[in-house]
Image (cartoon, rainbow, N blue to C red; front, side, top):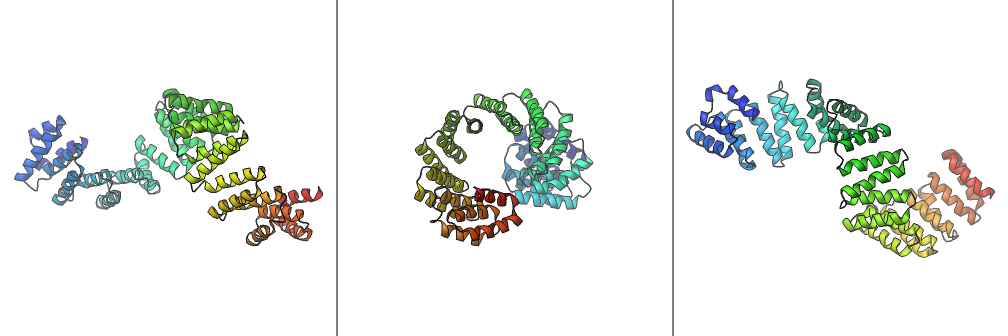
Length: 431
């Protein structure tokens, strides 16, 4: 509406009729469309009518027609900045992001003294998830118009997204000072504080967000995370349980409750929470992974195996860790051959992982079958000659097979690479 009124003043030689002005005042966009289209039949080059037609189409969500009309307006008068901005807005709403940004860059070039194209460019980049690109135009706007909270907030969010947490904290802090009763801003500020490891401040501001809006589940999850960082696990659990009351069908709340029960070694409660979580979201791999761990702690081995296999089938990313946990379970149960086979599956999925390879060597050691693992140990030492954990684990196995000379050579390496692991290996020799 403001854009239209500004244009009325700007274009006195082609002022719209009283009838159109009245229709605009009533927000009667169908009438505006009809009247503007009629005017354009009489005067095809009338930029005022063309712009009004464009705006009426936009307000009615007739976006393809609005874009075509905006482009005609630019063709009628390319010096009209508002028309360029409307072209970009239509393109953005039609998910033509590249075209929208290209239009704004051209608008910036044509109208270098105006803030509007830069402002629109920054916000368009941000809406498109291109926060790294949004930062420069948004910074320019903020420095020239620090009074515009929306720009400061958007810039803060872009800083947060690009992991510039200290700058995000600074800007969100400014916004909170000017709008302290905005629950969403308090929540965003708390998230930034949490990411910047300012845990006490994060707790304070997320509690403010909850006071202002006690029915927002996400705020309780942030509070839970901050309390966990402060080692207040019982309080964190209480906050997470609040989520399951406010939003009982939100699997994330149940998942977080399960994790906290697991951290408190309350395995039965953890199992119940994770089962509720996967009943709400059957394809939740992280929940199945931790459900498997909880089952194992309770001695429900077959249930643990089923859960870990389910996790592996759902998530290629988590599959190596799920298989590794499964292999360790098999090792503890004395199912050595199965453990070694599953270790192989885990390593095949994440070939460069040192921890997975160490875990396989440890299975040979714990099962007292280091003789069978000589080929594996030799291969790992050949491929990773300077990895301290590989050297330590291999050294333990070599001690079991009586290969003292190779262990001494490993100790010389470990003294240079990692005195900690060298000392650990020497402590075994002393025993």
